Length: 90
Image (cartoon, rainbow, N blue to C red; front, side):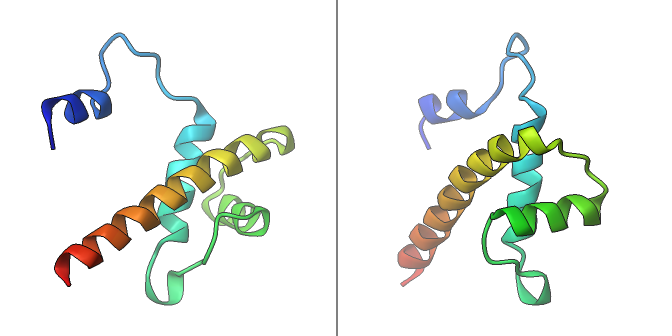
């Protein structure tokens, strides 16, 4: 990983905090990508509502689309990373 990559990932003290939807999306994707009995397949509306209810997170209906859009991007990145890691091992 280059210095440029690290600086892109490291937030500055002067950066605004990420929106709540982004934080929800990160936690939701972690939950979606759990292994074993906790695996929940995809970041869709049904899983989002179930996760929000289970974790007692209140997401307004008008925010659901924003959370899902962010979650789908994060989910695809996570799948891509895991695919690259498995290809590197083989």
